[in-house]
Image 1 (tube, rainbow, N blue to C red):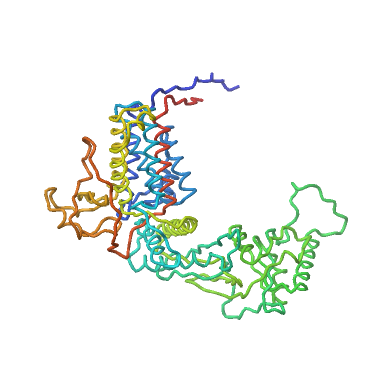
Image 2: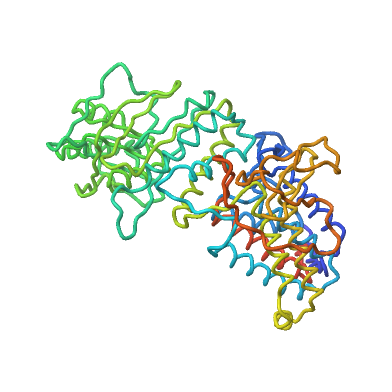
Amino acid sequence: MSRLEAKKPPLFISEPLAKDTVSQSLSLLSGILKSCYGPAGRLKQLHNGMGGYVCTTSQSSAILSRLSVSHPVLSVLTASVQNHISRFSDCGLFTAILCCSLIENFKSLNVASCTVIKISKHLLSLCMDYLKSEVCGCRVSVDFSSLETLLCLVRSVLTSKPACMLNKPEVDHLTMLILKAFMFTVPCHVETNAVLGKCVIVPVKGRRVVDSTVLPGLLIETPEIQLAKPLAVKRTCSNMIKIALFCVSMSGDLFNPEEGTITVHHGISLEMSELNQLLNVGKQLINDEVGLVVCQKVIHPSLKQYLKENHVVAVDRAGLSLMEPLSRMTGSKPIASIHSLSPCCYGSLKDVRIESFASKHFVHLIPPDTVVCSLILCNRNETAWDELKRACETAEHVLQLTMKEPLALLGGGCTETHLASYIRHKSCSLSSSSFKDMDCSRTQYQLVADGFCRSLESVACSLNHDGGEILTDMVYGHCWFVPSGFPSVSNWSDLVSKCGCGINGNTENLNWRLLQGQFGSPIIQGCPKDPSVKVSDFLTLDCFAAKCSGLQVALETANLILDLSYVIEDQN
């Protein structure tokens, strides 16, 4: 008999943020994430330590899902960021870096955590009110009747993922494809509760990125299809193709013993009985003028041959992932049994064709109204393709979010520095009654506000990986990057041409301030102006909904962690 061990008491850790191990782990995580940030971010290779698949990436979704953290404080942080990513797809690194910076800056203040939390919530409300106001100087309206801003949004997502290994022509090509694919998913006839369609990504690895293309409808890979022979498909009298969609196996397999007991009479063959039932289904499909049968699983070869002889195309092994878009595109209802077949489950298609890309052959299903499309996505190798797929899915989600809320925020660090300038201005003009409401002194408020602003600015600084100076101007509050190799006493106006987002040029007398190293007394800052003239057609833009959520998640998570007094760990 094995020896029983006594249960160990739980481990109580008081003031977890005061422990050196937590501070070191937080600093290490922050450093890893900062080094990945932006178009010039450094790539990370992640694997499980036992060999196998290696992921090369700089995207937060891939890093955080593969990065194991042991301390509960870090688990809270990564879980919050991953939840944000699952809802918005974008601004994951922004959220995580800002959260780490807020914790580090607030922890260093000689202010009680409860006071820090009250003040930071007030600062967050100032930011959100400003971002949602018409006078906000770091947001732009998105006009869906013009492609310009939409292209900037998609381009900004693609260029921020260096592991995709894209050059400028490839970025331009993919930007147009993603936008075209998104437009395919927008319904032509708007109803009260309009629902966007779906873009299905079809992988083609080992080919040039510029070979990627978008087709209306769905592609189903069929290796056994013969290109030489024309596709003869039965049509209805209205010249449409009727489709039946099966989500049950049509292979003729015997019943699963777990489903119950079957009584079989002497001389009866279960295999033949099942095959006869399948052929009866085939006869009904032919009588109902069905021209295409798509099965999620396997179709028996005899049934396939029978359907083919009657000019019905049979496609099997479509897979679970295609069932929902197939049903939506054709109007068909997935049939879950071969023993009950209702004609009301059928859908319709405009055409069925054979397409070939690289060494792959596909059946191309073309609907009468396009709400589902296929993005044939090519890249040179599997690693770059995986990263590009994630980037394309993010870009599509950003467009969907932007359609719900047609706004964008300036990228390239400019929103962060602009917000910091705005908060510095507002914090100097608060009335005494505001401090009384928050139960804090003016000095405490200024300290927390300065820590909040420095945290925002540290996110902008994370975009610089080459050692150059980072500036903000005192007029617009935008972020400017100085090339490396120039001394700090240089005339900055001679070294910068446009700000990080590209909306401002160095065409007027701007006063500069270094972002790095400003850890002294709070800076007196005027209210930043709204740029009046755009100097570049290629703006760097961020998703409004994703960044606003990231700002809220970062601060609320930082406050939650700052408020932790005990961590209780089960030792058993």
